[in-house]
Amino acid sequence: MSLSDPIGDMLARLKNSQLRNHKKVELPSSKFKVKIAEILKSEGYIIDFKVLSEGQKINLKINLKYNSGNPVINSIERISKPGRRVFSSAESLPKINNGLGIAIVSTPKGVMTDIDARKHNIGGEIICKVF
Image 1 (cartoon, rainbow, N blue to C red):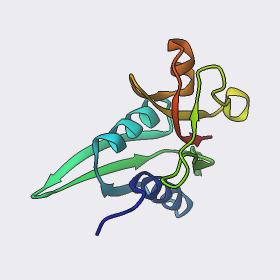
Image 2 (cartoon, rainbow, N blue to C red; image 1 turned 90 degrees about the vertical axis):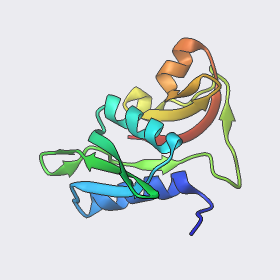
Image 3 (tube, helix red, strand yellow; image 1 turned 90 degrees about the horizontal axis):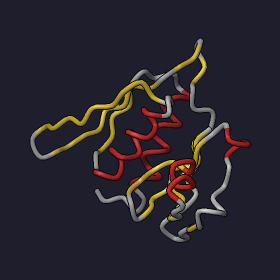
């Protein structure tokens, strides 16, 4: 089965799993999804992730993080969609909740947070925002 928006599917699975207080979520893996998981881990939104290989299938297993029973990710929202791509320059990158959240940006130098993209003075496609 092919998905038209695999990144949107990943974000929906993360959101739904945290609403149901699951400890782990498993989804099909790709290099782009692994980069997003690396950013979520480095920013403290998830505990850890692993790439599992079962024959032909390669899955991404993400351990979700909770703070005193509440999910650490309050909201995770897809910005750039397959039908409408959203690009931004370095100066006009959005600040999520006055800097409390992050935006994940796909730049020519790789996938990074909006803070890192501002530091390197490069813009790109705004993938999602996390708070």
